[in-house]
Amino acid sequence: MKVKPHGANSAASLKDKASGGYVLNNNNKTLCVLAMLPFAVIGVFFEVLPIAMTIFRSFISEDGGGLTIDNYTAIFTKKLYRDAVINSMIVAVASSLAGLFISFWGAKGYNSASVKVRNIFLSILNMTSNFSGIPLAFAYIILLGNVGVLMVFAKNHGIDFISSFSIYSIGGLMLCYVYFQVPLATLLLIPSFEGLKKEWRESVNLLGGGDATYWIKVGLPNLLPGIMGTFSVLFANAIAAFATGYALMQNNFSLLPIRISEQFVGDISQRREFGSALAVALMVMMVAAIYVNNKIAKRSSGGV
Image (cartoon, rainbow, N blue to C red; front, side, top):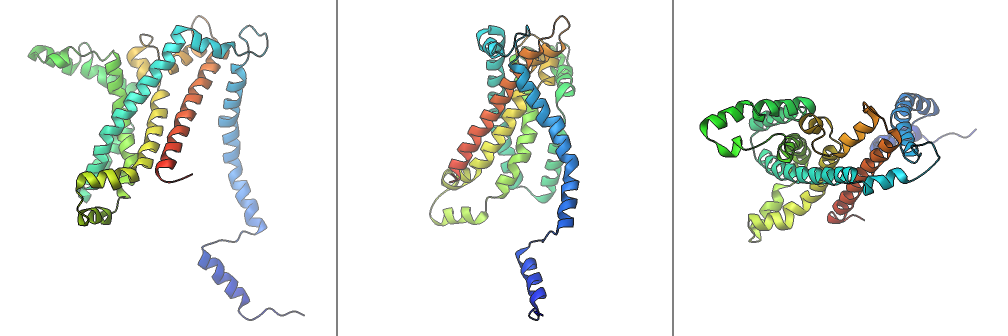
């Protein structure tokens, strides 16, 4: 009979505890698999299958003649849909850059504020970040519509830059988009600013550098991965936004999400195959933008 050395079990136990690990036996592994099963089923049926069906349907001919790429060709050969792609890209990029610029200063101010101010600021951000879509569009219509509160006030008091502004224009659409981009971007940038150490600024000052040197050499390079990641989220958020744009512009301005909706819920005709192709094009643009931003962020942080 082979006898284990004294303290072998306790040594192994101490080793596991020291490494922070948790040894799973077969029963625990089975429980983990069973616990993950509902999430796997939901993921397959509500994410994987819909995406796969959308991609497959996008290659089906509208006349039922088999597989084709005509649906994708029509996106870039017909002006209506080509403009929808271009307009969506312009609005998404412009609103993301504007939101990123504003939120940069908001996150910077948060990082240097007192605890009380931080708590108030976070409460405001959490409240405003959940205010978007149709309620946001209607709120701006109430303020800046043809008979909106601010519009009537501006007309009565001769404030031309407000009275001449139209909420139903590309400028109004951009204003709404920037509104719901700023709180989200600020919440995403705050952890990046909290990662900047005070010792880094002190080191720059000791070496004779000022604020400009600190931000150019230390601050911005360390913030760049977070900034690029935030831009990816904002771009995906803006390019796929539907409710705000539709409530403001309806069919007066061509946006890709609105054109996609028309193919599936049209009153006269429905073109589900072509709508699927438009949806795939939207997904490709989102994935491509996120991929490029992640590549840039990795290079800036010294990753491979």
